[in-house]
Amino acid sequence: MFAIFLLCVSFLFPLTLEEAIKIALKNATDIRVSRIELKKLEEEIRKARSGILPTITGSYSYTRLDDSLVYGFGLRDRQEYSITLSQTIFNKAVFDSISLAKKQRKLQKLILEDIKREVIYRVKEMYYALLYKKLVIELKEDTLKYWEENLKTVEEKYRAGILPKVEYMRAKAQYEMARAELIEAKTDYEKSLEEFKAFLRIEEKIEIKGRFEFNDRIPSKEELLKKLLENNSTLKVYRARIEALKESHDLARSEYYPTLEAYLSYQGFTTRKTLFGGREWVRGYTFGISLNYRFFDGFRREANVAQSRLEVIKEKERLKGEVFNQRKALMNALLTLKSLKERIKAVKLSLQAARESLKLSTERYKEGVGSQLEVLDARKNYNDTLDSLHFLLYRYATTLALIERLTR
Image (tube, rainbow, N blue to C red; front, side):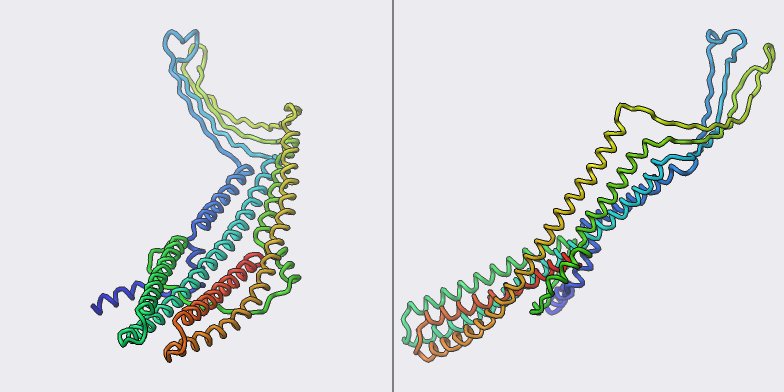
């Protein structure tokens, strides 16, 4: 039996918030997908760079004609081959494509960073929720223990004929209710724990440890707004997207420029040596330069340039709107934080009063002076006040996490 206990304990390991964040940054699906997208863009840069590198192509063909197709001095068997080296001398679209690919890579890096920030915030939010639900379980366990002791006291007095049966039935019902609430709290915690493990993509049995810390120092609004504009990862993504769209606009405009290419080819083919003689190979080099320019294409270029320019303008408008959204979220979080700070202080004072009231009512009931209803009300008031404190601390911690998400 002891060996089984040790085996169960060995599979249960405590998980701190910092460790959970590390696991999430490694395993979260959104992050892994974003990293794959980043690798794809690395290949896109290599693909774009191929436009400025030379290309070498080769070809070979063999043709055999039927007798009915051979006329005069034509050859029945024909062979031909060529090797060509091509080099782009000037093509603005190639250079703009490389620049665009680099901008897109930078954009994807910022998107990855933004996703990381969001994942960290979600981990903190879920972790703090689990801490709160553990505190609820502890409260329910303490309540169950309290009502269990109360039931024993009431039962003894009922057996002795001091209390009526209705008092005993009320105490027993209160105990059963406390036990049911504890089971419900544990079930809720286990569900949230499974959701948390699925988010981290782990299967091990884990134990959440920690307590809420209340720091009543709130950073200044001016300082946070400055950090928001400088550090907010979502705004950085919008700015990088604008830069990428500007490069797309330049790429569309590159169609107004000519292209210049050079090629060098070595080729050979079979022919008759003489009119009446055998067959021989003819070989030689070919060099050429090609200059191309599209004078008119039905206003397709103009439409592409106009569309790309409008995309830049549209993204700038989205950035302006997102700045207001992020600012609104920060201001709301600050207001919530200030409100929670005052409420936590007030609830802490109320908790002291509720604790003393519960202690007094319990002693009065044991001495036969007070009633059980007085104890019920005092215990309920104490439980509700303590649960409110835990919930406010949970909200305070998650609000701080949101502010960090917006400003770091």
